[in-house]
Image (cartoon, rainbow, N blue to C red):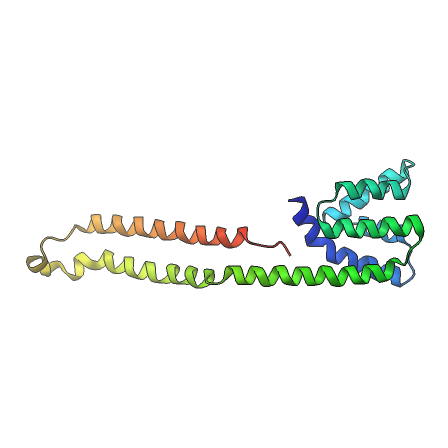
Length: 191
């Protein structure tokens, strides 16, 4: 769960850091800006890191602690980049640009895989949702349409029996559609 939340907002946080730092804002000010909100769990983590700094903890130690807490590979890489910048004053801007491109590529791959995994689900949902009620409606009308044909075909079930069959069929249709929808929802990459 945490990994998916980190991955969802990571690209936006990296791009924001990249833009701020390319315009001359320092790392600490960029962290403060990200902590201001809008980046989900990353903003929450940065807020906690700032609180730790206000209590006297060094930024590099707070970053190292956060690196241990991070779940996603990309978030750990971002924190490592920031840690290296604080520790040895490396060129963080180029690293952020490369990481943002890699993260964007990874998100695009996740979306392509999600689209491929969905495959025939929309068509299945549409088919079940349209054909089933039509067929069940015909089943419900069968006693009225074929009332006089009872001598040829034998006795037909009563209207109430047929309507109960229609209701059960519609319930099964709704359940089937709900399961198909859940299947699509569980495959959501969270991008």
